[in-house]
Image 1 (cartoon, rainbow, N blue to C red):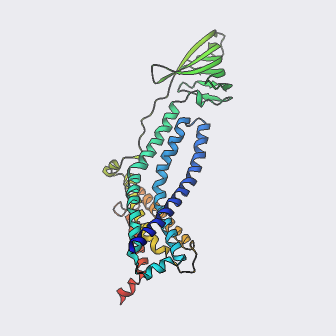
Image 2: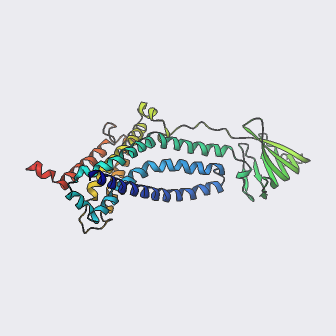
Image 3: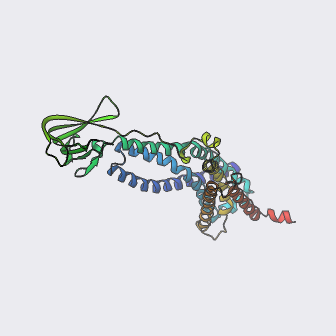
Length: 360
């Protein structure tokens, strides 16, 4: 009977966890998707990188969603069992606190391992990859980033390009381009069509214009030269791809371990604290979900959310205090986990009558 009940409790918690996590992830991705579409429309992000950024965002979101999803799923699943009087029936069959935690551990262990990998390696790598995509997008601006009817700056030379529209074949119609050299010489080019092509040098692009005119001269003088052309290629240098300096959130775990800077110490403790908090929240959800038969399924959920918010805010505050040097790195964030674990033990003891045995 115990094995049947273990599978039953495991299935209830696992299915609820999957539903809660997917719902929260969908809400976050909806907002992220709208922001990414805005960046693509403004030319800040290439179209081909949109889904890459969304995928990397999923990795970052899951680092937080898995712990909160497991916490809420445990409370919801066990709360339903209490509401439907199934849990009192199980307890009448001599299913104690260990019988509840055993199937929960089956789910908790792989999730904690996954969260640990996401916190230590997955999420920092995703943050660095997103920064890399943003830097590459600024460098690789081309005709796809030119909005019809708007002036666009394409290169470090401050070359300004305007086009009436971009055809389906990728040609820019009614092109206007202006750039200025270091000696004050102005170059203005107008053409019926234009297209961007690659060159042998990966740092240089060619804007090939057809059927147009080129004006060269110094403003305020009459010494201008006018050239008509059937095809004219104008080269411009792409901005250099800067070497990204990883921030604390995107640094490698071993680099954080070897660093003595307070910001790096705080980030190191935070990454280790995420899987620890997942374990504590899963254990805490069991006593918090305990309710009387007449209570509703969601009455304890508000209390659980309040506890989670307090826990998360204390961790965030402790991390900030480490960075500011307000508390010792030895104390760090660990005191928050110790307090929450002590609170969990006290709650379990009071609900199971352990305090009476101690005082007796």
